[in-house]
Image 1: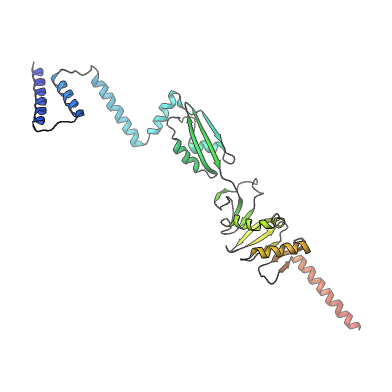
Image 2: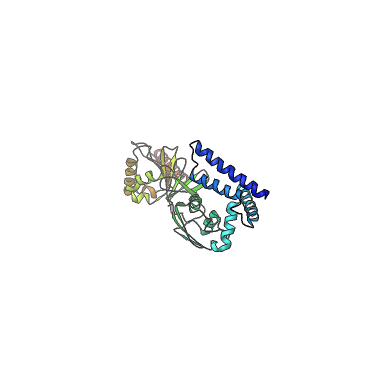
Amino acid sequence: MYALKDRGQAYSGLAALGAVERDKGGVLPRPMRRVVRFVGSLASGRVGLPRFAGAVALVALFGATGFYGMALGGHTREFAEATTSAIGFSISNVKVSGNSQTSEIDILQQLGLDGAASVIALSAAEAREKLMALPWIQDAEVRKVYPDTVEIKLSEKKAYGIWQHDDDLSLIERDGKVIAPLRDNKFASLPLFVGDKAEANAADFADELANWPELQSRIKAYICIGGRRWDLRMDNGVVVRLPEENVARAMHELSVLEAEQQVLERDIQSVDLRLADRTTIELTPEAAARRDKLVADRAKTIKQAEKNI
């Protein structure tokens, strides 16, 4: 009887509160009015709680506390993956296309797909960002196909040449950007660019020599000197020294010398074309020694002939 009286008093107090609010000219928002009516009904005994409401509320409280703790500890993703994998959404099929230089093992390791990952928990945007961090990847597309498949389409960079800087060898794109260190010989046919800043101007300089295909086909290395000019190392080891400016003039002279005198087939060490008014040819040490001997023998023959006169 006492409890019912208390509930009635509580309900009367809430009703009075509503009346006071109306007298003041204020009206509670619709959601708040529903809450006030529900609390009033609960206090008056007209609405009763379910039998196991307390137990359910306690379980909900523990669950919320545990979830909050997982969030603070950074384990929410692991929990989501474990849960969704257990009900049949684990990733069991990964389809990769467009990869030539990037192995599927590298892709799986980069994405952390170890067999326990879930399709639901996987973020396609985050997976794409991880793939873009791989050295050969130009572009990537990641698509989830429920319940257990991930499709990956890749576009890879194209190696233009090999850049030697100090003792390191790197593969570069046409614009000079480094792709990755050179690890094997399958790119041995690419042109070799040597020296500081050689990678930045590699394609432009190689394009400049395209007007002399017979000579360019024999170039084994483009050597950048001081970031200003280039030397060419030919397939037989001869070094052609080019000027800083007017490379076309020097290449034309070299093509004429090769056509008329086969200068690159001679026993020489270098051809210096840096000066417009002269071409300097340096013999190999062996050829220089033979030349010196011939000159000495000739001088001796002339001297002996003078004595006999």
